[in-house]
Image (cartoon, rainbow, N blue to C red; front, side, top):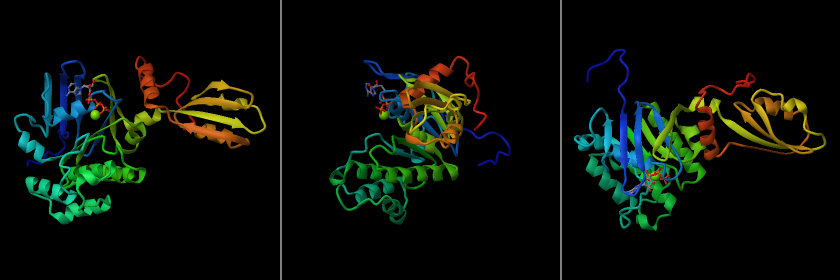
Length: 317
Ligand SMILES: Nc1ncnc2c1ncn2[C@@H]1O[C@H](COP(=O)(O)OP(=O)(O)OP(=O)(O)O)[C@@H](O)[C@H]1O
Ligand SMILES: [Mg+2]
């Protein structure tokens, strides 16, 4: 292939004005996006938002009503075989071939794709601690999901398309999956995944597209999202009323307070709040990130100005 010196990288995945409506409602509307090599892109949205629909369109499992889709610069409809050969795909429900063992299924898939050899596959099944000699239907949901992941990851495909990759997995295995996803990106491969868990996207993705009711509301760098993130802090003081300096901090808003209790909303870093709290005796402290729904609402709130909140942008951070 020609060596482009300083030209920009061509995207692995492109969608432009892609629309798909199902009979009876649902689908996606006018979706535009690009994902480049070395990037982890996450589609984040609630159930029924259209994440799986977008993924199935990329794989040409369904066809768009309108718009343009390119994968590796090619039309997944016309060049389906070539395109598919370079994709590792984890479907949302990996439940087929129940009679086969993981070893049989994975060997079969590897044969179809011309590799990789069993030892390379076994390195992954061992990493995930999968019993490769039991029929898939005898495995737990999480263990079947792991087989699906091995199937997607094996052979180091240039594009990984993972529909809810960590659903049903315990936290330790989730972490391993995140590590493998990050490692793939570092090697210059492209990852397109769906999730409905904000904290997962925060951990693993470079960019996130928020999708709701079939529309992409916003596409954001995760680093920017983090800077705009909000925490809810509930605190109960042991023996003093709520100290006034707490609410004077930049980015801090007092949502509710009682005799010795306060609920604060903190934009950006919570460092400043923690510093103040550390000078007092606390009976209780809880910090939580907002739910996905709260985060979405905030996104809509911020839309008109597009800028940071008027008060401040967190000088303490
Ligand atoms: N094959 C289909 N036929 C008809 N409607 C469908 C079909 N697949 C999805 N839909 C509808 O399209 C909308 C989007 O579904 P989709 O599966 O893409 O959502 P999702 O974001 O993947 O949700 P989840 O988080 O539950 O997996 C939903 O309203 C759904 O009911
Ligand atoms: Mg889905």
